[in-house]
Length: 382
Ligand code: PMP
Image (cartoon, rainbow, N blue to C red; front, side, top):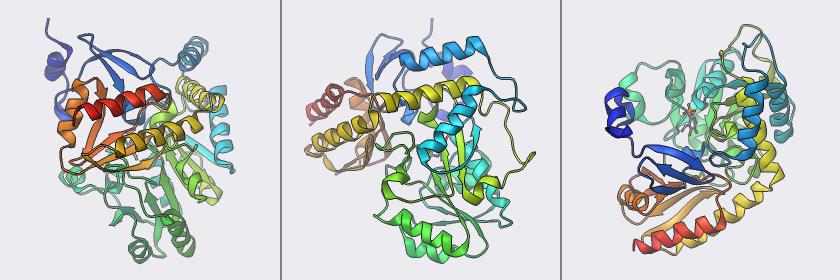
């Protein structure tokens, strides 16, 4: 029988290229492929598996919910959906409203549409940003290689250099509906803006009445050692978008709006069949309660520091950037793809979002020992 990879190469569309592995099992931060080879997962499905694979709290919550009540439609509501919305607002520490989606792209689409209800149409986004692959989210995405084949894209979107407040100030006008920013750009290589960037963006938006939207799809839900990364900078956005880690492996996203942004959608404005389904929301509740109950935010900060210190000693490493467990290992040479392949051979899954950057976004439960093992493996590749 041909391997899963061969079969998928025939039956699956070719948009992702050849799969790098066919996986049959995951437990905690350890994945097993179809040949029985094991890997420590330092990508967490690119930040998707906040608690790792098959976490008992998620397994129990989903099993219980699927047995009790599945999804009907958005004309009804169930307890996990309400409880998760309330919990997200409580974690943000502000009053607002939540719209659930199935993905990060959809959460950004919702923010994009919502911003139109301010009566304005212009949007400012940043170069290098990734906001998703649906047409609206792609229009926000600042990566020409991904966007150009699909032009014309919807909307009136200007892209400015990430981290440059003067450029942002020059681009935002009284006709700007929203400014959308990733607090740390994940897909383009864990790029961190200068200190004060988000606060400066807040001031520019206040001056003109534009909504400040922070795409926390990659940085949110504990990834950087805070519930939401913007909290580490004391900035209050009008909207945050979430996905990835929120569902603990199930499809779940959210567009969380505060203040005046919270009341812009009215009945009939927007919707999606599976957004906020009780099964995904039960998983989301289990994720957040487990992060809180097990003190994982502190764990993220500690293991993140350990990785940073350990990796910065390596001769191939120029420096390590990022926050918590969203780290970019910046190399002295453009050998990231080769190093990622060598690490995979050695039993560690990482990826190379740029020729000279290796990204780490492991499950938040990654252990001190597993972090040490990665550092040792990289040492072995000197
Ligand atoms: N925003 C950011 C910051 C992301 O990293 C991603 C996914 N890599 C998305 C949006 C899109 O999320 P999804 O793939 O769930 O549509």
